[in-house]
Length: 207
Image (cartoon, rainbow, N blue to C red; front, side, top):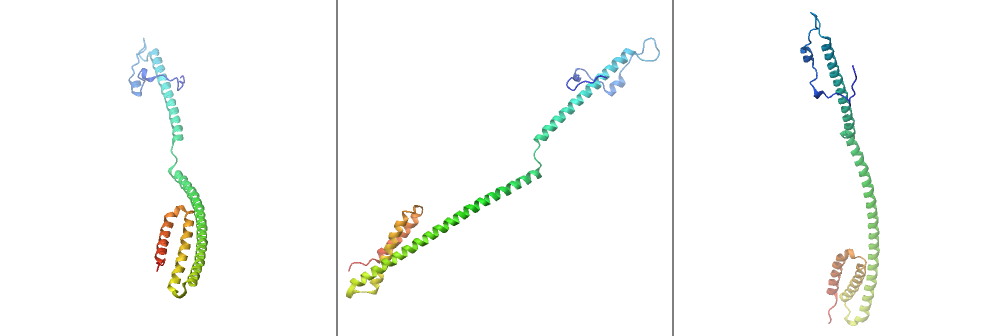
């Protein structure tokens, strides 16, 4: 029996191959001049066709097995990652990203806290300087009032002079600070307006 390559297999569609039933039903003529037996040439033809059918079938099986193997290898390459494995990978990636984000957040928060402390410290120092200057101006205004009031001196007028001087100093300081802080200009405007209103209210009317 001749082995047929998977790529040289006979085309079984060119004729109907033998089946077990067709072999059983196949008619072999009797041998000429004999009472028993079959014609040798007919038997040989049947054997050749059966051999071809078997070879073709084997080649077809080999070819199909090769194709199945190829498809299996392709499927293995394209097969998605096992969900459990992928879940573990995603979890690990999530942990890494979370840790990285937390580290960045900690850095930003620390920087913001440090900046806030510096701003608060600067604001406290500036406020202390403003108040100190305002008190000095208030003391000078009170002393000036006492020196010039004479017989018209009034404790209420002295306190008013002191308050006016203090508010005026604070107002000037806030106006100067506002030019360096445009981001909170609206807040400073509100404070300045409030101080201006108080200053106007406290300014003594001419007698």
